[in-house]
Image (cartoon, rainbow, N blue to C red):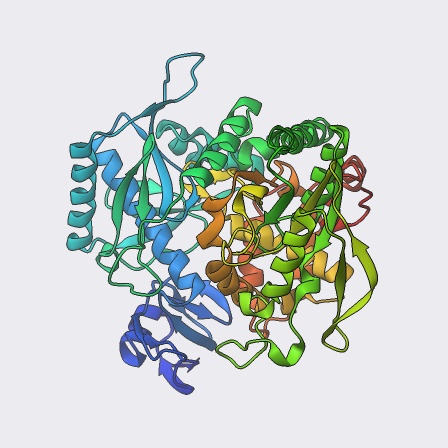
Length: 569
């Protein structure tokens, strides 16, 4: 017998060597309890010594085990990955001549398309638009698979065999990925007679996947998974037209460059194409900044203020500086106000559910003073700007005056910049709003998309360690709180933007790997951040890192210099 410590109840259990996590969960708990809400969630997976494992994992040595449900980020990811495989199975059953492509994440779910692998022109894939009755049939087939309660199983097979399998299934990106990794074996998953690869554990069976929906959208559809607030219902439909257009534009550009997945990106780097790729990406992004400045210039008769908002590590600061430079090119004179200087005194700051100061709340800002100053500036008056003293926790006035002249344009960046409640007294017609975020549409392969959240987390890990002396462990542990603030104060307003700016660059994951990988490896296995570090390291393991000689080609004006250092704007 071997001894297992279960974190869910703090007790030790003796099991036979070779027992599965599923067998142990039936003895210990089939549900987990959320410590904050008391809500109960079915067990989907487990952390074994802080490493994510599927319930079919066999126990041969003493371990610490924590069973997790949908309320845990890794439990949610396991559910969504499994749901993607169930969708894949249904597509191959009903549309055997089509290929499922899971392109990117949207507020209403994962955006998916069916493609004709042979295409029309030059062999490029052609989108196949599902009719309402076909989408309904696809949903019904998935529901039938969930009722059948089919098991997900996995095995390791030779990589060469897997590449041939994926090519036969019209999944060249998946084949390219495994070819670029140069490994002898890889893990594949089985569902019925279907085989595929997923970059993380799945749930035990389709019977756990009864909550989902398919929503028609543009040329494809959204795969909707359970809401975090109520796992008995799919996530609600949310406004997403502008965000979807921005992601689609980037996805199409990736296609034109020939880099449509990590496999083709790795191939480009291994063949010595890093520096040309860096130059191409930076040229495109500079052009995008110029396009935003052109829109501001076109509205100069009414617009006097530019607000820039975006989630953490989206490059808001760099974007405001680069946009200001492009405005100067057109003859405008940009001036900057930092919204952080409009915090209320510390003792008036609201607190969050844990009793900590909630600096991301709209109530943390002196909205009356901000509105008064903006209206005065719009009228041509001279105002004295505050400087918030973070040490004493109070705003101070030190004779810093500002006045807007005819050719001046005011640029401000902050998380609430798209929320109409921030400056309700200011005429919205005088404001141009920009939403900036790292909206990567580069995918791992055909049915494994890259999370834009992970992209931003890697940026923040690198920047916080370099500029603030914050360890990667601290950044990871703080990240859930950051995400809660984004979901509450930023994402609901992203469709309010006049323009959405994508700060992602095709070469940034190979760049971030060079800096982030050694930082993540420092996190000790006993740390509560270890499981997340392992997950990120596993993801980075699919990516070829840039070399120092290639990194030196990143220009000092690049938005990525905000995170790795060496920025000069």
